[in-house]
Length: 111
Ligand code: AMP
Ligand code: ZN
Image (cartoon, rainbow, N blue to C red; front, side, top):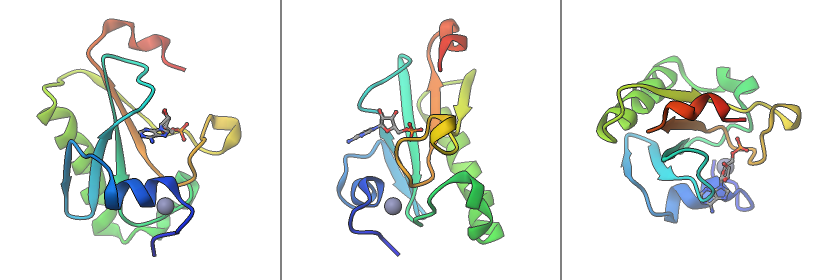
């Protein structure tokens, strides 16, 4: 269920998306850490990757495929996929999301 105070529930419903299909949206990170920095946000609100088992198996698979398709459609062949897990892992928005970073060989500097 969408959570009224959750930024990414709101952005999923109302935001500007690069693409949106089948319960997933890709949007540009407001503070990009690479030439291409997209966020893949599922419609389903799950607080953190720790709770990834809350996704039905097929939906979890579709989410991974959506991440790969998003990179492909953005023209990326080589890229990084990052999930920050919990405060200590750098997570600031507690709605599971996938960072897709590309467009630069300096990506190793992403923190
Ligand atoms: P994380 O730190 O892994 O939780 O990632 C949250 C990401 O959301 C950060 O990279 C932020 O720059 C990004 N972000 C925060 N607010 C917005 C927004 N309104 N639109 C797009 N990206 C955002
Ligand atoms: Zn949410």
